[in-house]
Length: 416
Image 1 (cartoon, one colour):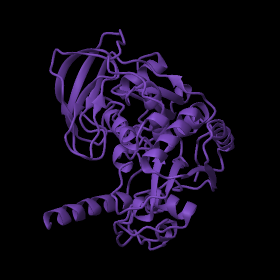
Image 2 (cartoon, rainbow, N blue to C red; image 1 turned 90 degrees about the horizontal axis):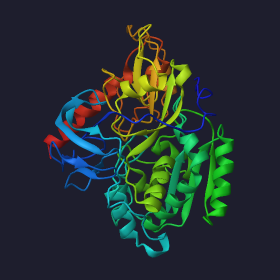
Image 3 (tube, rainbow, N blue to C red; image 1 turned 135 degrees about the vertical axis):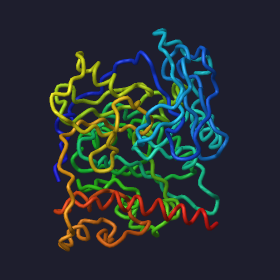
């Protein structure tokens, strides 16, 4: 597999263009959707909470700009549907909300206060999974957690945002790791990084020593899908999870390095999750790089402003949010950057014509979970896409598996 990271891995994080209008979908995380806390015509400030839900598994949403709420309506969402969203017209003042202020030093905060701060900031897994971080920091009492793993693998092709965060925001990562470890009451911290990121390994090792954090660095072989939680736990600790098991069932909590950096940033500054680093890559090579983008920025606006010209389409292309293996192909360019947007890739379209299975067995050999994708896959499938990638007949195996898993989930819920 070609990883195609060389185009952006060496490019420092740049500030992305600020949008004229920001769109905030009420679904930007795993769990219950949020409901608006503001009305049309309301004035909002940077960092102000504009939506939340009462459920435990959810995460509030904050405005990344200051301005006026001009609409609350159905808008295109990266998951392929239209969902309720808050539209805010930018006043270009960037007026901060009065509630934003740094938290006390970690030594002065309790584990419960750290978890509450993370919850109020709307932090979710920034590796793309978007599971609410405060939930992972509050494991059930029957699960005895002994290890915190920071996931710095970033094994998806093209994506280098985590790599740049490890190089440029190592201090925030270490501070966030300290906070997470205190919230979980664990002393064993491991950061797992692929061996193609030697500069990040060196930088985080130095920063950990500076921050007096006892942390082990586990160097992974560069291989997709090394960053999957189940594979990571088995590789790093030798602990195998059951098909429906989670890392906490093995006494482990796994967080992405960018998530740790956001926790550190929030506790130091008081700022909630209102922006994130996004890799822009693929065939728009002149603008390829890593950008700090405000949440709610429409992808069409971002790409147009980065080119500084009207966005033209000299030839057809495929727009993907995330990486090419597990990312989502977009049906419109009017979708906004959300909490789970790790990358925006423009790729050449390819022939999707499927042929009959030739029984070559390549999908079985490629599956990291030891499944038989050509026949069926149980819930231990991590949806990495290796089977579809390797299939010479171009069969959309992982897509069918996703549909089957969703149907099984519906059946289980109906039979409860």
